[in-house]
Length: 167
Image (cartoon, rainbow, N blue to C red; front, side, top):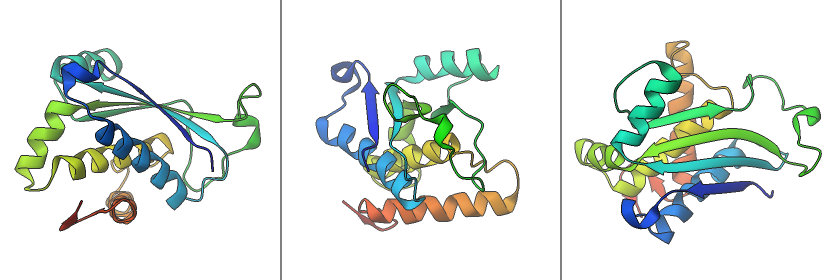
């Protein structure tokens, strides 16, 4: 399936390498594949720092503090309902799922806190955010949180970032 992932950032300033960008793209694509998304999709990913994510968090969620990742869904999707063909952009034939903002300093710090690699943390945050774009919400219930965690681990395994077996 041709899922497009667009990455935006001052990569040199944030220390983003081609391999990290490729990992984020693979993580988005693997999430869509794991869920059997049959339509081509677009996801925009913004790499940012603590000040950038804090500004987005303040502006969009009313929370004036840094966070690790934010998701901005284009649609209010329900994971139990299929994506409808009318959601596809007639010009591109793709469905714009939305935007993800990743705080790279937060990912680095959390990788240390959780004693795993920076790559696993970026993969985890990317998969988690992509699930939010698709309508999953761990704040709805403990059952939904457990389901999101299971899906996240399944996807991470497909990109070589299973817990304890990191690339």
